[in-house]
Amino acid sequence: MLNNLEAERKQKHQELEALQIEYDKLLNAANTKSEQEYYELGEMTEKKIKLQSQLESIQGQLQYSILSEQERENYLQTHFDDGVMTELHEELQNLKANIKTLQEEQAEIKYEIQILEEGGGYSELLHQFKQKKYELDEDVKEWAVYSIAQDILMSTINTYKNVHLPRMLTQADEFLAYLTNGRYTKIHLNPTGTGFLVESMDHTFFEANELSQATTEQLYVSIRLALAVTLYEKYQFPIIIDDSFVNFDAGRTEKVIELLKTLKGNQVLFFTCHAHLLPLFAKDRILPLEKGAVQIIS
Image (tube, rainbow, N blue to C red; front, side):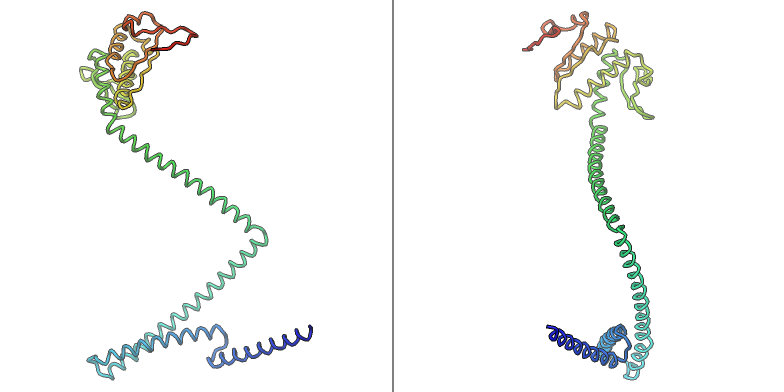
């Protein structure tokens, strides 16, 4: 077994010596001192052959030129010697400088990677990177949801401001004028802030907090009812009122009850514990409720 290994080693050694001889012959034949110079010389030779081929093609085309042969030779010689060779030499020097810079950067990066891997810092940083990337992906998903929601909300707001709000205010104007016997005729958006301005019959403008409590509640009722009959006109939900007019006097209460009776598109459920309001409704529309009892409305 040992003899076979020794024979194989000698054979490999002989092959290595033969390859080294061929290697040295190639370097000597190219008149270069290193493998890198050999490859660089090969690249330059390929460029020279390519340029020579281009030169021959141009020379063939110049046969049809009006220039004399001597003039063409002068132009070609000058261009080839001073132009192309200078450009190739500068390019070669730049490539050598770039290769050296890149090799230095590569060595520094390899050293830094080695330090990180040996100290365990690389694994920790990689874990942190993946964790941050996961968090970023989740944040992007959440941002996308909020972005879509914002677009939908802005679209809804614009539709409400441009379509529904004008219709709602027009209807609220009619309700308020009816409830106040024409003393207040129009509701405006406040141009300097939030809220509404109320215009009286003599065209005086009031903010809501400048009105009496009863008139403010009449304004509130007008807007709420206008919302119900305009914004939700396709879906005529019941309107439920639970003793909402306790601050009204008898005249205002009668007015608002009359207004509710005009709402034909919506069922109105009016809850009250005040017996003096019952005469305002037809007897067949009144349903007494007993505490603790379950009642079925037919």
